[in-house]
Image (tube, rainbow, N blue to C red):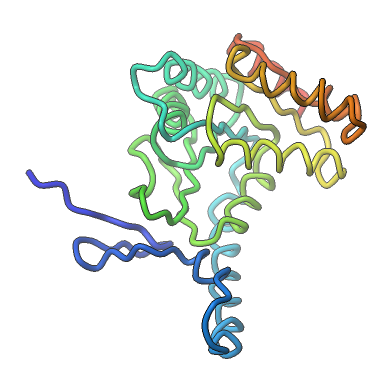
Length: 241
């Protein structure tokens, strides 16, 4: 069977020749061209508003939840995929819903663990040119056009973050959470990195370069925990209650 090219744009999906290569965020942020944006941007506000309303409506009664982040490129035979599955399962056992970006890899692993444990497995998808919506283990899904609307949902409805090895998207989510905690936009918000070997270089740089140069404080680093123990990672989320 030939795999059909598919792209999701919010609640809409496109297939075959209808798939475009740009994203809604890209068109919003791209300032090149004539002044037509003066007439179109005010209308975008309504679409942005709709994304917030849809997200708030879907998640308002979710209850305690933890966001799990990690690479979409994590293979199913990767040890961290197994850890992600265990994290999802243990979070459900501890009374939490599990929120991920809804994609493949580490996100799929956490959603799988949560769903198979009988819990609420949330996927907050995003329109991208190279991903096809949410994974099959999501049982509550919302697809977004705009990153900033999606990020608001992660922070508003999560009481903490567990972060598996990942790339630029994972770093973005990690440092945004740390920044919100540092600036006291959120309180009692634990962030735990799973994977001592993977994260040790970053932590060393933060301590030996960024902290040493006075760009962050010791308290900023103390807010960040790292472990290889899934049970410990889940227990540390207890600070969010």
